[in-house]
Image (cartoon, rainbow, N blue to C red):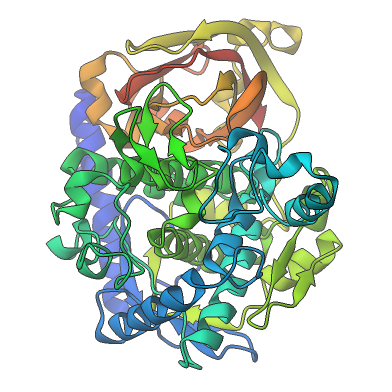
Length: 539
């Protein structure tokens, strides 16, 4: 006999739904029918390379990027250490030197440097006054300062960094005498062991940079001292990755994974320092109101060796997501072509390699000669299954836009987006749960913004922020090129699952307006950041 009992208590319904979903997934896993392509980030597992994950490997695959805490990962870390010692001794105009490779990502402008630059004597404000030297500097800048952290270039974030690491890997392979070298990754989102909360010891000890090329003083002091990542920070990294994994569109995944864990970890590792603290890349004190470590500043981040392990982790998350979602999740040449951006790097012998068309970029990033020793295996939601089966989901028309002009502060900021302003006054657009919805948040800033904000949809009160499954949409964290002019940046959040869950437990009625809340997490906001407008798009 089947008994059906109706419970009016909404929270009980919510708990039961999660229990049933977990039970179904557990049964699937038991009988072995939970393939990596069925992915949902409500929880993630780490899976070793299996026959199914081998699908990501092409015939060109030769190298394996490994967990830095594995024995083989430690071996590759020593190869990186050997190579860094050599390339630190090379002149800054050598494409395979430490300075040149770091400057490809970012470097201060010569006009911002002092009269002397011990790391790169040719690259100073004084040198730029000489016509001959000006030409040399111009040639360097053809390939320096090229990371896509400038407003409007975000679509290139993942592909550019993938190819940046790919070519740096060749440099290390050539100089370390380890022909099988691959950049190891530090999975700081892992809760499998307490060791993942620690920055690998080789980056901390010994503290003499002349003998340990992995060491950098300008990092968060607690990390360099061997202390773990703060629990709230690590949980934020986990939440950011989990939410990014829910996405079915490259553009939204790319936007969210850049904010967290990427931007959050850059700022965290960089830490803060007294303004008068000497910064070797700036060749003097930091030009900002507050000093930051190398990883916390776009023009200096590529000079800290931990950068490579950090970005190997971000690349691994992207590859885990791509494996789960399939070919429909891949970035298209058309998306990249919408914002022109240079892709120029140097191989292990210092030879220029350029990708001149979006088609060349797409072909390169999805035809890898490396894999990872393990991937995050994502578990699936029914909504995602429906969309995955479509040839290619895409963002459709804007349903509603709210002009805001609200400043982000160290207090919660809430914006109400009235659905009654939709075409024809239709307030029931959320009634059709087969639709997907993406929130577009346009922010503007000037200078070097700092701070991290969690974004919530229809949050009833701040205490409810602990329920990440129902209300949390993602994170905004600033890691931007400093700008003398006010610039804008658009951030994307897929809120389909949040709205569906809220309607299911009757906390959100289909005809209600949207309430978007920005909760500050850490860091005093020293530059004015404005929410310019919020839009809702149909997916």
